[in-house]
Structure formats: C-alpha cells, structure tokens
Image (cartoon, protein in one colour):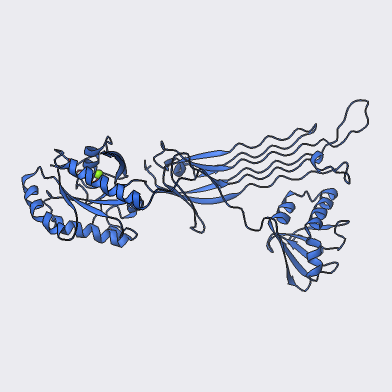
Length: 449
Ligand SMILES: Nc1nc2c(ncn2[C@@H]2O[C@H](COP(=O)(O)OP(=O)(O)OP(=O)(O)O)[C@@H](O)[C@H]2O)c(=O)[nH]1
Ligand SMILES: [Mg+2]
C-alpha cells in the first residue's frame, strides 16, 4: 500500500431529497382538518475543502466512494424531514479537481479553507400542506424528493511552492531543503530517496517563501525512466526553478554542465516550464574535487546568462547568498503576478437556462420538451397519484409548455417526451392537459406499443 497518493478518482453522490408527505390533520371528535404533510429534507452536499494539515490524497485512494446523507421524509402534523448532512472532504492545498469523464478542470483549490461544492444534494419534495392553495384546498399528494448529483471526479495534487529544486537523484536537493528550513526530509546516499515532494519554509529578510524538492530526475524521465517526470506536476506552480547539481559524483559521463543540460532537456520534454526563471546551485563544495569542478563549470554556466552559486548543503557554505538570491527572484515573481485572492466558496454551476425550456419537433407526431424545470418537475411527480399528475400538468401549463407545443404544431394525441429521448417520460398529449394528463410511463413501457 503506498503511503502517498497524488492523483485519485472519486465516485461522488450527493444526498437525495426526502419525499414530501401527504397527510390530513386528525383529532379525536373533530372533523377532518386541513392538509398537514411536511416537506422532505434537502439531501446533503459533497464538498471539498483545503486543509493545510492534509498532505496526501491517500484516504481517497483507500475509500474512493463518498456519499452524503439523504434528506428525511416529511411527516404528518407539519413536521418537515431533516436535511441530510453534508460530507466535507479535506484535500491538500493546491488540489485540482477535474471531471473524471471529460477531463475538464472544475476548480483549482488554493488557500486554506477554500471550499467547492462537488455535488449538490437534491431538493426535498413539498408536502401537501405547502401545496395547498385556494384552488387546491386539500391536496391528496406530495412532491417526491429530487435525486442528488452523482459524478466521478479526479483529484490531482499539485504542490504550491515558490521555488522548486530539480536535479539528478542524490544531488542533495533534500539536504538543501533541510539546510535552509525546518523541514526534515529523508536524506540518503542512494538514488530516489525522495518519493514525495517535501516542502520547507525559508526566510530571506522580508521575504518568506516555500521551497519544494521533487524526486530526482534522470535522462529519459519523460519516457518513464526512473520515477518518470510525473512529479514535475508539483513544479508547475512554482515561480522559480533551482537546479541542484552534484559536483562530487563519480558516475562516468556526468559533469555539471551535461547534468544541467540533461535536466533542462527533461523540463523541455515536460513543457509548460520554459518561462520560469532559473538559477543553478553547484553542490558539495566541501569535497575538494567537487570544488575544483565547480570552479571550472561555474563560469561555463554563467556564460549562458545563469546565476550560479557554489555551496555545500553539508557545511552550509554559500547558503546565505543563495537564500537571498532565491528570495529576490520570488519577490520579483510576486510583484509581476500578484497572487489571486483565493475564492472561499465556489458552487458548481448548474446547467444553463435554469428558467427556460425548449420544445423540439422530433417527428411528425413526436415532440420533445427539455429544460431544467420541466425535467425536475417530472422527477418530483408521483405518477401513481392522479392528483400529483394533475398538479404537474398545471405547472407545465403555467410555464407555457402547452402554448409552445401548440405553436410547434402538436395536435391532440401527439406523443410528448419530457427529458431525453432515451429515458424521458412520454405523455399522450391532450391540449387540455391541465384537465387530464395520461401518463404512459417511462419510454418503452407504453402498453399500447
Ligand atoms: N559531502 C556532501 N554530501 C552531501 C551534500 N549534500 C548532500 N550530500 C549527500 O548526498 C546524498 C544525497 O543527498 P539527498 O539530499 O538525499 O539527495 P537528493 O537530491 O534529495 O536525492 P533523491 O531524493 O534521491 O533525488 C546524501 O548522502 C547526502 O548526505 C554536501 O553538500 N556535501
Ligand atoms: Mg531527496
């Protein structure tokens, strides 16, 4: 079982709304009173929230199915059903939420406390007390609760740091973070010690910034060699790149300049990072041979316009200058692109055209009605109850559906589908729909066919 997961697909289901209740007030020795059925409760939402104490998506890898509570049914004596509880999923800062089916980015969560409603709970159905009107004094029906949203989302973690350290395995990236900050990542003399990005907080005068080390890269990482370059995702958000180069390696074919070029080639293959300012750190200057090599390689890299720092993460030599140089670059990047204020709450936009509906002639005698309202009303209707169906017909008429159908050329007896052609509801339309709607059931269940 891995202990760090930075990408996961979640199956989300918001709570269904509770059904409304149809009930009539009764009291001993009193005639039947008015309707007193309560409303159904709202289904709970599924929400993601940035929690600075969450560092991995591991929990979601273990339990990828998350659902919020359903709303409770309404009851007699005007008792409304309780709302379903929301489910709040804590995610690390910098988590990107995508629609798992389309890959579309739904939201980029930055800043502690930022919340996003992934799936909205269904509305509760109205009880018959709420449905009573001058015209319909004692409704013998209630509305059904609406189903909650269901969807699959992909969570992707992208570390939020100002500076990213990149380099070969064992170059000393983790050692440098440990030397610059209070972070204590694992350090060892074998390659690929770092399997997850580590974050450290560094102070340079007025500027406080974060530094991340990413797992070591090797040539061919873009083709999946070593740990691959998938961890470069964590570099994407950094404003500044720092190359950490091992000047003490004995490996044949390696030297500071070609190491630098090899890492640059991997960054290019990954893309998206070309515009990031860079500086170069020649590490392990406490080793005499390494120092000699740094003295040769330094000017060669400077000729390319790079700022080069010769340091030792072990003895802390040269760290002060390096820290200030990183701080300056971070400050410059912040001035150039001020951080956007994090949005505290974003609700997933509902489908467009909330108020409207559309009528389409599908064939000579078939018409389709689509729209958020009519489709919701269908879901709220208990088709075993004639009164409920009559109420639906009233609502459709008031919205103007009947008029539009007439305009579109519908005649008595036309087949009207509300919703999608695959699983919408089919009606045998009578222009006086408000008086007698004939419900024939879901598509394919029409007994006359
Ligand atoms: N002599 C010397 N050794 C160093 C210095 N910096 C790091 N090392 C050693 O180099 C080895 C690798 O250091 P790490 O910091 O783990 O290297 P890394 O770049 O994080 O490596 P990966 O996580 O595997 O990519 C360790 O044995 C360190 O003790 C240094 O300045 N001088
Ligand atoms: Mg490391």
